[in-house]
Length: 114
Image (cartoon, rainbow, N blue to C red; front, side):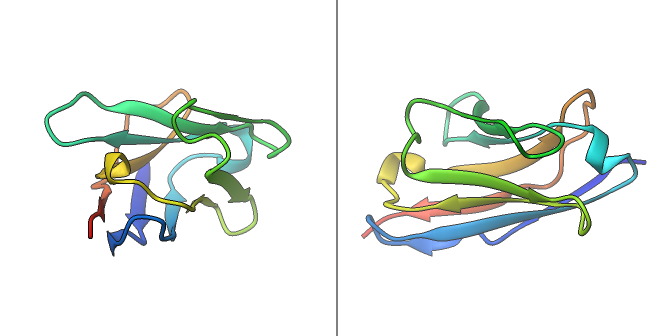
């Protein structure tokens, strides 16, 4: 059974930083690409960033390029999202997800506000 536990969210001022983490179990972590998604208030869930199974390739939504960095640790089975220069429009619930699975975790709330 796939389990995904996101953490690291919180309230931060514009321009601030947060680092999200996702602990995983129940699948072969090192064989799957991983992604971070977010659901802004009142909007659909959207893809934020993806990383290949070995970590050598990453992709980002245009809205976060240059500010967010996705990384993974295949020994610890974790995927992280470093978020810098946060903006109010980054406010959302953030989720991690392995490619090829429909499972979602509970997410972690990020609120960017002064």
